[in-house]
Image (cartoon, rainbow, N blue to C red; front, side):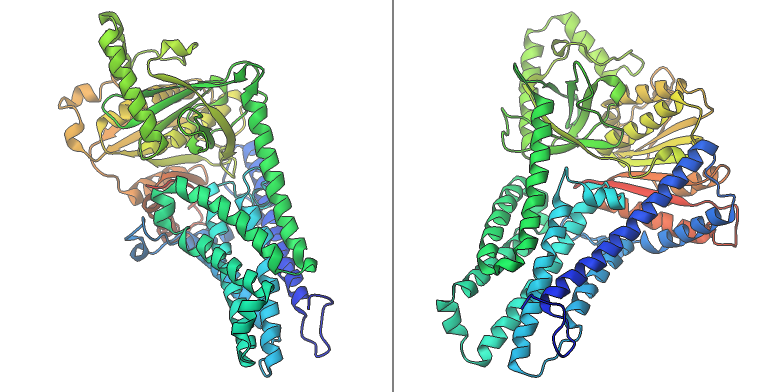
Length: 605
């Protein structure tokens, strides 16, 4: 049934529908790649000219079309955000892409497909089977970490976005597989042959097994609460179930359709080989594991600081601001790795993370550091205790990355580093203003991106950046003290810039009772840098973005980076969409209004 292109009546044969599917997907990826090339050319022009304002007709037309697309694609209805831990609804842009994908699958399935005889039911089942199996390579590519074909073509480096489309295309795969099973059963039931087929035919039995396993993978075990609260269990089950599914599917499908299965298996093998090859190359030496992490609990908070010195050559492990790495601790969780945002930059020659304690590995690490800290306090000298207290609460103290791991209290354990991954898809130097909005421990991303941008501006005279703003939402004042070293490094990076770049850090604290009573001492430059402003209330995201847009319009386009939960990300995108529409950015009615680009690094919780 899969040979040739068309039947005698002009209907496409089932195998050819799979090629039609990949023709459409290839055209979409080619179009996305052309848009990415246009963005790269635009970024280079802006950085060289040191201006992000469109001046020529083509640049203004591109800015207008981009602004209209953002107004339409960014919003998410607030009505759909009431239960983020149970259901997560995408933005309008992502929703349109997913809906278009499902419409494509339905259109290909019903294209010139008659339903008049019993043989047509079987033909429809074969159609659905070929459309289902053709989707497996795309689902596999979206799940790869190192084989970043989709990221290279589309510029989508965010693992959150790739995982989102991986899940929804898997659901499209499940939808077509369900249609395939329905039509095949309807065909056998028309001859009253269904029960006998299920008992005697091995192909039918393997098909039912593979469908049940697919339902377990896509529908049951991958729901949001399980991924959110039982990620370790979900991950192990997902890997084992996928391997079993591919094996059973091999037995269910004919050999001439295995090209899609072997292609998917090839993608998985190449990705695993690349990942493990780099993992061993970066972490293993003749003496054993290269890296050891010092982990310490931060006083008066549920945060952990993880510091990993990168000794020797750094050519084998290079990262850029905004990326993250998977850390695995063999002595605590030998088969588990967790992603953490890198707060340090390449010049520090060390990886530094601030991690919030949750369940699983972070809970075990926090408990171990607490025990170690209690033991250190009981055996340490008074001078050492005074130094620890000063380091924890003095914002004007000179803080450097440790040269030896013994200089920091806490636990020191071996660690495996897998990464880096992710990063900003667009060069932030092309925007006149960077507004980084982060919540809680998401400041690891915001501070790293802002510091990396300022250090890049200090090395060259090119770049369109004029303002760097950080809006940080935290619950308690003590949470800010955990990042005082990173804040001071950000201020030092700004001072090293020869360019006239302004820096402002606004810290919004929701728990007003945690703020010291003496406001003058609290806002004193001796305690905090002058660019840091503490605001004792919850932030109004729309007002923050509106003020940044007003400042940015003098110089050019604004970039907003977000690191927080799904509600914060949706609030930022909704606010940007409303403000762009109200200001008529580059739509003809107000030529002074500039566009706004949003990049989201979303985390669970």
